[in-house]
Image (cartoon, rainbow, N blue to C red; front, side, top):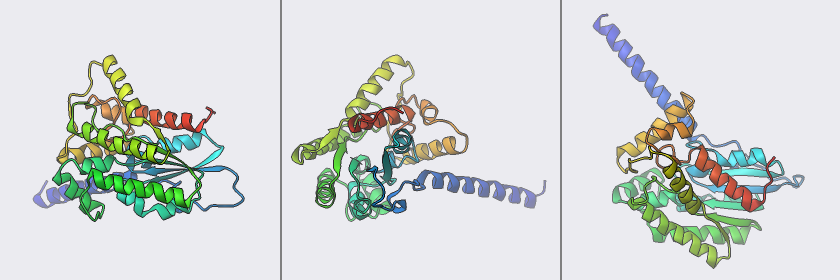
Length: 289
């Protein structure tokens, strides 16, 4: 094989890998069919509209899509997925008009994982400012400010029953710094729930029980930790490649790291995704079909 042929083969391989990367990133960020932009409210529709707003945990392209599963199991309601990858509370507040225009009867709010991660370090904060066009670096005070604005706007402009959901674990080791940050953000959610008399769905606490139970059952639970360096992005991309190119389940992808609830230390696998789905089903009193 001459040098020119070798160069062409090398370019072909690199080009193919690049196209595969673009493909899996598109699959991971593609908006769901049930996104608010695709929904038109109709006076002829008698079913209740349930609108689930949040970040990638709700969006369901990186990890288990619990919103679609709720829709599949409950034909008595229309489910709209208003989750957007990487969103912070500030981003969600900027797109509330699209949510309000759907005239929802029920709203779930699961937002704050990115606020928590973005407030962990200056490096992470600066990254979120660039990627999500934020006017300032994330902080817990700013999170509370934007979360309260979201609640006020939804109360003032809809007649919906609003459920707040505590944000899930990041990583699966209780001693990690990020878990304490998550707990503090969840205190904000619980405080706002009390202030505005809104029901709070305790996803974090239920996930805690689930992880502890699974850890007792398994001898191979993760000793790896959640990282804020380049490996954080690598783990997400790896999960996307494994799922969308090779068909691995989110559960199987997480098992490489000994994870029981997430596929990449951040996003839900099938087991934890079904947990939040069932918690919402219980609160909405949905019967299994």
